[in-house]
Image (cartoon, rainbow over all chains, first blue to last red; front, side, top):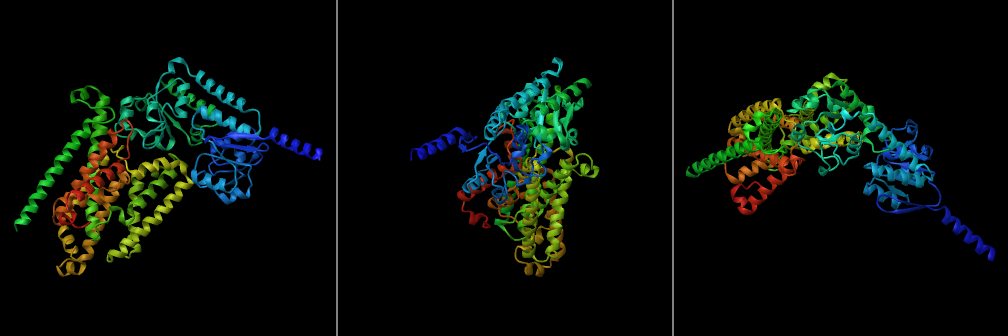
Length: 286
Length: 340
């Protein structure tokens, strides 16, 4: 009898020793008996983070927009965060599903017994926190190391820009509208770390829809814009008087670069490099 | 006879009121924006401010007026043509067609930006116009012509739903274009330039002239098709011409500004609630009512939370709907207009 009690106590304590507690961005605490071995990611930046933590092999399924790294290609695609394929997710029997907040999908998955971690990487601090959360979930040690690498890449990009090209008035257009990336967005944070001055203040929200005349009045010296919008940029009414357009200082984000720049994830260092290289190239033109 | 004269006087009064409102909108629209209120002398001395006023504010305000004019006219036209007070200018599937056209163009731009010259030249404006026109043609083909109003209406609804579903599917598969699409679907006057103003104004002139010329036919049609025939109207060609005018007006406005809801539906009702007139006058006054409504909405869209913008479609619904409700409460609406 004593042996049995001791055995039970031993099992209970070992369970305590190895239980992993993870708190997601809703504040919900989830417990796992062991590091998650089968994970599904329904957000491209989260898929990238899992892979950057050298745990790509733990991913058993991803959303249809997770296209990096290429090793994800053979994995099952399970819809997107907004319309996940619930049946296919259940069939894969994941230890955890990581996704951004989509109330109906999250509730449905939870009601079917799937452990869902809602993670929202929206700025640099979020990325740092989410990487750490994922590292805990996956039981890997190098969460802090990964962030330090990203951070140093951003610093390296910032250092590559000479002082005379710092403090330029920049405008980053996210999409037609015009929706802009303000100082408080993750793109704005990168631009600030590169030492440039964003014409869209943080008081307007992360990605505000702004009046075009506000941009013309602010008269940016460099414009960052996607390749599909760049074609018609000079034809926009009144925009011909903007310095960046007059001096052809338009940084066109190519389709391949778009995914890197538009995702707050482990490639933020590369993103800073892309922005810095363009600032340098346009500065040389001056 | 005296009541006719009185109605005519009220119509003239309403026209001058709307004209004054539109002129006020023009002045107001040129003066204010996110960059603040400019004095004219100050503007002349600064090329950037001059560009803001001459290249952004002026065409944008005039464009909003022209687009509102087209939508108000097409709303009255649709309601007269289909003898249905709930008829909307987007009834023949043009809204969904234009939306699908823009969605496909945005996806094509994403897949191969700059590589397809014809697509670049066509632009989103062209894609929207082609989409809207194609949807109307599809509706007409499915309804086998213009003869049967009910069949035309039903086909319009079916085409609208089908193309809308295709558009949703496109957006689901390519979520990157979602934000750009949102702007199109809520309507925006941000990028209206002089070319757009010229196009819309010419379109408005043509559409308003033809519609007014056929006002008598709409009056006859409001009494029923058989009565219209007995009054000597040749229904089919006249209806065909008016549907072409409707498609042109809606196509032009949607292409330049996206889907601005409610202006077309509410403008004729606002006019009817104020004056009792024949179709020729109703079409003309609805057009000016639409212009005033969209003009005011555009200014509020750029001023209320400047330098951010509100989607203009949201404001047209709030302004037009709110005003109509207020009128319905204030007057005994059934006596004044009776259609609602």
